[in-house]
Image (tube, rainbow, N blue to C red; front, side, top):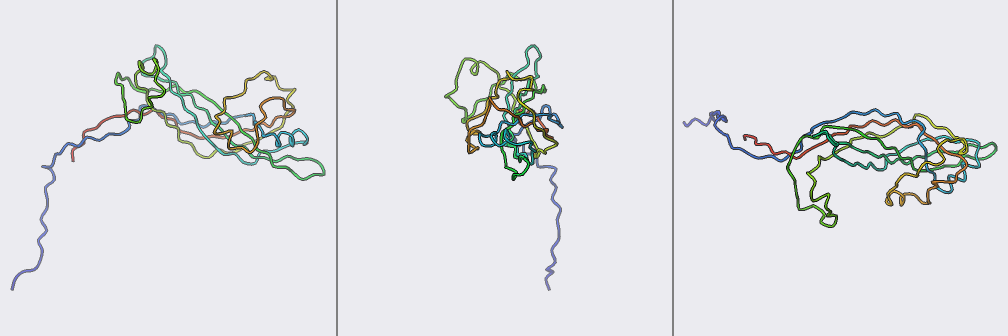
Length: 223
């Protein structure tokens, strides 16, 4: 009678040394930020600004992070370090309060910018891919060394507080309006009021984020 039992044989994997090249991203530096953004101005829509000017007060109820814009530039005379300019765009929802009338919902846009300095590694390599845009060629882009890639990971922001102030009592009447991308302006049903308002809605926002610089790297991994 034949033996039908199977004999388990061990396989020695120590002799397998096939080198495989892996293309991945190397994190050169990162920064954990816990921002408490105080008295951030909200640029309200046209109807929302009218409702705020006629109300006795207002309160912010909800904030949504719409978009984050990131720009990376090398730090002069400090090889390997880069400035990371980050701009957060928030949609803020609130409601007005007036004696003897129902509260009105108001909405607007808040913009917050900050700058970080991170180490991005020293390199002389210039990387070109098939996705490069040939329509934005210029002398600066042709002569510059490839910059590291900045990545911002954020969690949902929270409203920490809000208040209303008279525009005439603000010492920043001559402040310039922020640059707002057209795509974000199209997310609102009405134009935003950037100047000429009687009252302003100011909010305090809590924002948690991790910002890091990455570079392409090739690793040889034995398989």
